[in-house]
Length: 375
Image (tube, one colour):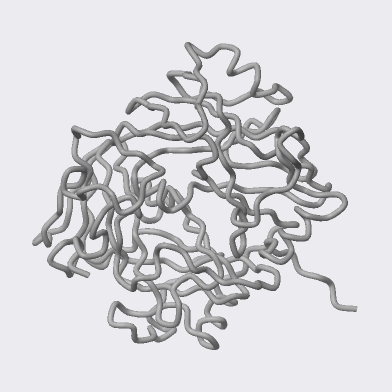
């Protein structure tokens, strides 16, 4: 008998565990119905949505072991209600907690992991999920039953949010579903995962592997190497708007560096990978936020890559980079982040999202978001 390997739940499986007789994921308020909307289900994740109450905390914090998040929000400096269809203002640099509309009832062998949606990471809105009694961000342990909350800190721009807005996504899995670098290399040889920026498959010997992933490299061989967020803006960014904002009002282009790029501590950068990536439908991807081997900076906020991402010849990775305590210089071709891969169940509808253009892109909120890169 072949033992079933741990895997991330796919869209087919998520639909089953949401709409079945004993669902894993339910609405927070049963009076609003218990069924999660089908458009919240992605190829290997579920979009979680904002409730209508905002608690102004000022600073980030975690509940202690066994402590409900409600005890944290009881210490809020102030709170307010988000009206349906109306925007609520969140200050730059200030931390808020918003109860999510969804709650979990996981069986004992299933856990959940959370990540900002790509568009949220690319606007430097730092979001992390809190769970009752769990003293770690972005994690719900095996068998977790309870409510979920979202901690929100806009770091570069003040923003508007509204109830029902999806800022974060969740993966559910049974056990450690990561595959080894060897398995990634075999999948690449069989199906093609990594491409150069012209769309040619990268030979396996040119890839640099770690225990559970493959390193991606920075690309400064372009006229516009990336963008750095402006230190002040005139208009807050509404996270519910699409194709609305002038990119140059929020982002300063970085011309091709001649001697590398020095990351200033505390500044936020959008940079591109040398590699284009496609994710086979049997796998999903995740970029580690920190990796000590690449330097003292955060390389990614929104880490989930769904099955089918990248189409047939890959999409350039956009990295959300923030310098830490000391300046760090990046040079063209430096390894910059580690992409980890996980098994996923059978997928019915592969990724068809906002980021299928082969070149880099700003978030969906901005007009001409690929053209500004020269893509």
